[in-house]
Amino acid sequence: MTDTSIQEELEHRPESGQGARLGLVLAIYLTGLLIGGLYVGMVSPARTVIQAHFGIDDTTGIWMINIYTLFYAALIPIIGKVADRRGRKHVFTACIGIFCVGAMLCGVSQRVGGFGLLLFGRVLQAAGAGGTIPVANAEIGTSFPPDKRGTALGIAAVVAGVSNVFGAVVGSAVVGAFGVENWSMMFFLCAPFCIAVIVAAVTLLPASTLDESRGKMDIAGSLLFALAILLLLLGVKALDFTALGTSIVRPEAWGPLIGAVVAIVAFRFVERRAEDPVFHLEYLRNRPIVITMIVSFFIGCFVISLVLVPELAEYAMNEPLGSGGYYVLAIGLTSFVTSPVGGKIIDKVGPKPVLITGLAVSIAGLLFLALVAATHPSFISLVAGLAVVGAGMGMAMGAPTNYMILENVSADESTSAIATIALIRQIGTSLAPAVFVGLIASTPGMGGYRNMLLSVALFNVLALVTMLFYRSGKQGQ
Image 1 (tube, helix red, strand yellow):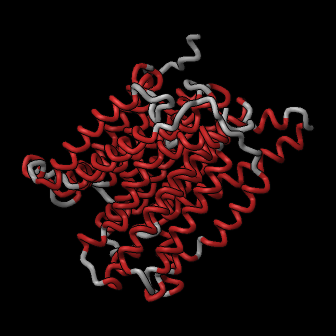
Image 2 (cartoon, one colour):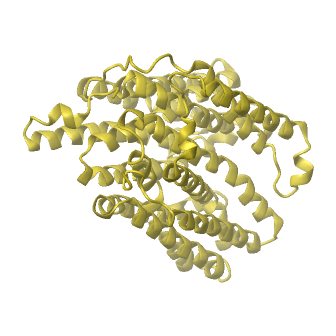
């Protein structure tokens, strides 16, 4: 393994000291996840303000969000592989530092450097935030004892998920507090927290050891893999799912998609000859891992649908523009409760029952929203439906799939394996919004939102049916 396991490091210490040490380590990783998660959505409410400052239109301005999601997805597996080779402590600390530098550049761009510097800073933020996810989850998943692993992963999942949901709320609060003319403060504010995490990580995290037995780093494969993901997502973002036949023939769509296919073919050729591949092709022949990937994709589609909740609430309740974000609290509060509870249950019965239950609960909530709340909208029916959806999301969001992948790979591949699952989930979050927006636009009134909710329920049904075939590869050994 590339890291000294916390369990191994502490196995000769008193149990109380071991628990305290694990608690400190968990707190450090959770803080890193919280910081990175908040900045996924924090920029959204300030986008129009930043565009006005730089004098750019929506077509250009949206890239402050697009470039983040593109590089976030593309770099996750590469950073995960580096962590398995160089040690999680080193990579986690470096990622927090890179994220902080990126945020500072974004803030400075208000005074010097302009929009180009802001975009570069967002790329660095994406690299830093994306790297913390697989590292933190892998360290938590492999370090905690089996009877506490699910609980710890559940806590990590709720921190990452809730921070994503509340990022936009925090962004609005910061801009409101400092004024639109000081939008750069939303980036500068993360500096003291990042510095505190770095100091704590250097001081308290267990030492990492380098793994020199893996052979050469798969640099060519890493570059091709990142290129393929970038081109794939870039091509999909250019598609209009309400006019798919027309949009797919546009060069900005088919060009990147063809490039992605070429990069994937080249990647497969390079990867089969790599000493230490960035992506293990044998994963595709492992049934439990393939099932975990498929379910992760659908969960990504499910979670990203929640960004449309404010828009849905504003339309259904005739609320003022920008006020619908408060309805997200119904989702966040119930998921905050059910995610660690689901983790505790995983420790007793395994991830399969928990994930199936979470998906079933979320399907019930989505159907209620589509068939009842959308037909007869009221504050009570909308909040009740969203609360049920949040309860299901909390159980299904991250802990079960992370647990599943960890029980099907060796410990020395845990970080890159979780990075693979995070990537698949991120692809779902990148592809699904175009489908959902297309469904909303295809039917006037609440009918469009009803169709969107039913499509999300369908994604969850597909994930649930897929899970029925899951069985851990280690169970059969």
